[in-house]
Amino acid sequence: MKNLILVEFGAPSDQNELREFLHNLHGRDPGIPELESASRKYVLSGGSPIRSKMQALRERLAGILDASVDYAFLYNKPYLADVVDASIRSGFKDIVILPLFTFYSRRTSMDIDKCANRDAKIKVVQAYKIPCLADVWGNRLKSDINGLRDFMVVFTAHSIPASESDQYAESFRALAKKISASAGCTNYITGFQNSRRGWLGPSIYDLQPGPARNIVVVPLSFLLTNMEILYDLDIEYSQHIKQTGHTYIRSGPPDEGYELPACLASVV
Image (cartoon, rainbow, N blue to C red; front, side, top):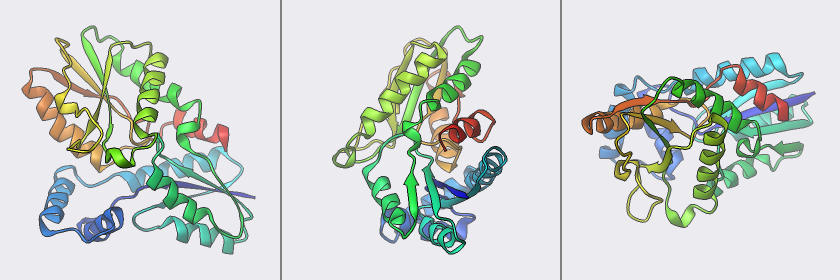
């Protein structure tokens, strides 16, 4: 029998886990200002829904597939390496790791490959290579812009150091192009969140959406809503959009609705 393991970055279950998560994510112990900032964001965004969404997606996929389905995180419990080892101890010989990331990142791929190096038949299926994903996202966007006459779509992704980007920016813009084509939308621009000197740009704060009244923001870094989306976009960026006289509308990510599980199951 096959065992499917869904993978995400993870998120702290509560504020007490913030330090451990940030340490694992950045490879160093967070300073007091960084920890206080993360704690403030955690409270203002209402925490992260990623665990409940991963569980819901796991249950939906288990109902579609003739396979066991687990989930794991890279930077907090349950760790991917531990879940893979537990699967092998349970007797699974055919294991599929499905990272829920929408474009290539060298560091993420290396972290996952380390966990895939076990004494078992393990295959890694990259979500950004799944053809139906653009249509799932495109259907969501098409529904959200239906009836809007005066709008501009802003596709956004988390920025990373340019020296580590490899195919990241190219994959991001290629996915934005596919989603816009699927949704029948031609008026869009692309930008990065948290962009800084030496990182990928342009920043979404430097984008000029023009006279469009409605700004439809589509976060492409993740398939499931997380704290970054809830705070960085729904709180910080939405305030910026409103201050410039526009209306903020967020479209996506796909989340655990029927279309996403069906798309993922089609390649597993």
